[in-house]
Length: 307
Image 1 (cartoon, rainbow, N blue to C red):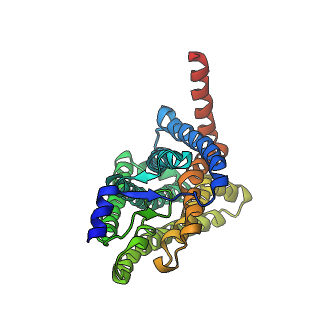
Image 2 (tube, rainbow, N blue to C red):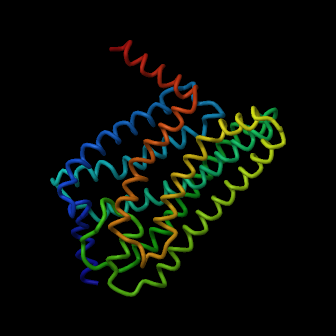
Image 3 (cartoon, rainbow, N blue to C red):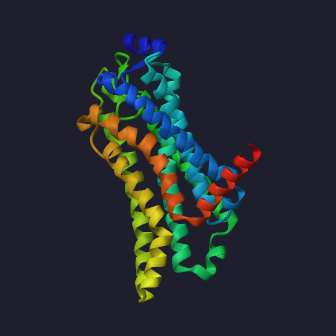
């Protein structure tokens, strides 16, 4: 209990990538550029009102989610890389844990809602606007955020109930698989409970997404035309890429026993999904969608005219 009180008072020291000091300056420059691009791309979706239609409703929520996720971790990481301060208070560590788990859970459910949206667009195009009513969209989005928050609170309570010894955290932000490594006692029972929630969340949402795309594939094949298959792929291609990026990193981080989780490898995986994936999400939707590219041109035009 004494060590736990010390942790509460002093917080944690984030090791980050200090074991590769020669890479810290390179990481600082690259991450600063990626973070700036991610901020610009995600803010774009919130500024251009022509994207706030039924079709782009969930895309705007995904952009806001990515914006929150990167902002909750990257500024702290840049300070860490600069070497000015590697500490994080206990309160901010808990806040990062809540936000990362909440936003991750929200994205799981939100990607299911986007798959349902694509299902309605491909399988029921004439009834699309009726099915995807604004009230239904609002209800689905609210469900996504509430589901993520509930998942986060359960996981955070279980994680922070573990007595912790020491304050050296081998990561660049507070994440669930890393904190139990500081446990003072045997945590196998608690870890088993913590393992069940992400398994249920990831497995259930992945099954729903695969089910939606099974119906989409069957509808596309029924058209018996290359044009129909191509249109279905164009409608769903961006979402499939985003799903692959998200579930690939989530599977590594949360769907393996915590005892076999490698902090060294985990830092690089976390680097991918906290910084690179949010930027790639914007890039994927921008390059594959003429409306998003049009929004980009309009915003840049306004900036140029105001200058």
